[in-house]
Structure formats: C-alpha cells, structure tokens
Amino acid sequence: MVKASNLRKKTAKELEKDLDDFRKNLAELKFNKVSASHQMKVSKLRTVRKDIARVLTVLNTMKKDEARVKYAKSKYKPLDLRPKRTRALRRALSARQQKLKTLKLRKKLENFPQRKFAVLQ
Image 1 (cartoon, one colour):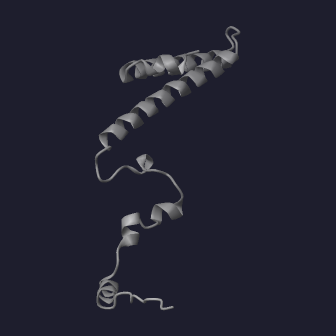
Image 2 (cartoon, one colour):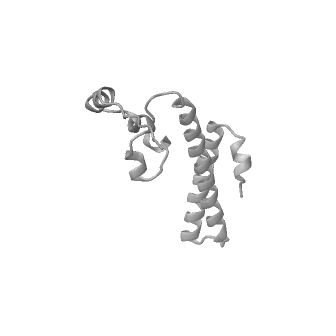
C-alpha cells in the first residue's frame, strides 16, 4: 500500500512510472485469478486498485494546482477552476453592476435633487 503523502513528494514522471507498474501488476493478478495456476490472495487485487486510484488522484491534483498557478492572473479561467457557488449566485450582478445608474436616472437625479425641508415649531 502506497501513502498519498509519499506520492506527493514524487515528480509527475515518477508517478506515471508507478502507475504503469501498478497497472501491469493488476493485469498479472487478474490473469492469475482467472487461470488459478496458483492460489493467491484476492485482497491483493483490491489494494492494487486502490493504489492506482491514489496515484491518479495525486496526478490530477498536481495538474489542477499547475493550472491554478497558470490561470491565476488571467481574465478567463477554465470552468473547473472557477468558484462553484450556486447557479443563481453565478448569474447575479456584481456589486459594481448593481450600483450603476441609467442615463435617464442620472439626469433625473441631477435635475430634480431631493428637496430639503425645515421643521418649524
């Protein structure tokens, strides 16, 4: 069993090599299970499958982190790097857009300012 913390210390090429080894190992184990030439533990299949999943997970997180760095300052980001939120929040107007006023409203406010009243006693 391989620990994810150990995998994160490796480079992408080393991880690819490990992944290839695990896949070959899995193919051999499946072949041995079918041929039943010699008995082996079926639990080994599960651990190898889980190891493959761990390696793939670490590879994908590394790729995603690289993409985050690459697109950090760009105007447009890939969909999977954007904040998820809800559909309604993603489509809502930004604070700046909400503060904007139409030309007609600006003219109205300029020409007809709010009146000031004095309260007499």
